[in-house]
Picture 1: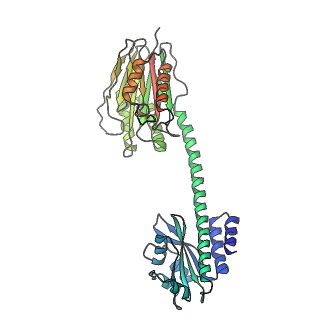
Picture 2: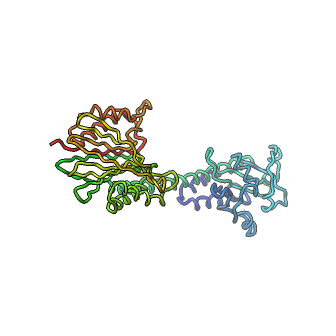
Picture 3: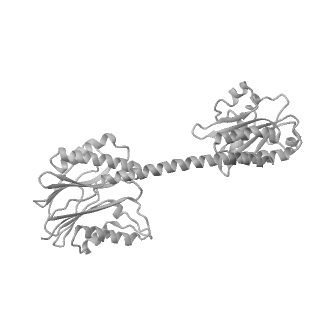
Length: 421
């Protein structure tokens, strides 16, 4: 009946403070105890703190329930939590709550426990290995009668209190998780606004792209920027991190790139400017690999810098395939980078494929890496007439390779092709 009343209190109330307060208040009535205190264990402060109490004087509350109790200050509580089991200690007739702080738990025999005039009882508030605190109970005077049953009931009540705490923590976690999911969805929507909705259309050129994140938000991105004198700024980048931090750093990088290309006269100068602006905000271990180039739509040239990024592949109409190596270090690494730029001269039918490491570092179900050699093979065998077909064929090969294995990293691809007229 006692446990039923406690269970009803737990079910009928929704606020944890009210539930625990109700349990503490009805315990003396249900099981005939003199004092009760519920001590929560705070893992951050590494100390006990009393959240609810009954039967203590004002002075006792100040010393025992209105301050934190770090390990060693109240050994009786420490042992109950460490051993995760109910412990008891006989109390002398003159023992007061203030004297409990000095009690060193001993291995009392069952006869001593059952014959003691009154006991101090500490019951861990735990569900399996999850520890939430300790319930401390002082029996009333001459409480030997029905003691075994009383201890069973006390243990059951402590379980109800632990369940209430666990449910509240789970509810809090669910609320936090739902809020985080909402924030992540919003972040993804914002991030998608940074990715071009449409790509420039030109009679002599084709541009196609794909953008897939391994998580809901990621650090890959690309951009196509219209510049004066019939030129396009082409940018692809990968932040050396994942999730929300990478997405935020991506947004910063994109903003800086857009500003830098309008303030400078060459890709090398633009990359140097972005690096200088990124450095003050770069956290330890976070950097950006990127390829930035300017496509002259009239002259047919692509002037670029590869800042520590995966090497693009330049597929020539004559059958040659060139791997474009790095010409600079990644952005956000050093304040004096050595930056060089290179110029490609496109012929009709030439295609340039830029990509991030989500492509080459994808895994098959057998744990095999897609790798650059496989990409090189795909590029050599490819027969595509448009930039979009190039992207589609690479993506199809990747999908066949990974099968049902999810991508471990973000994936971005961008293809530039000079049309055969």
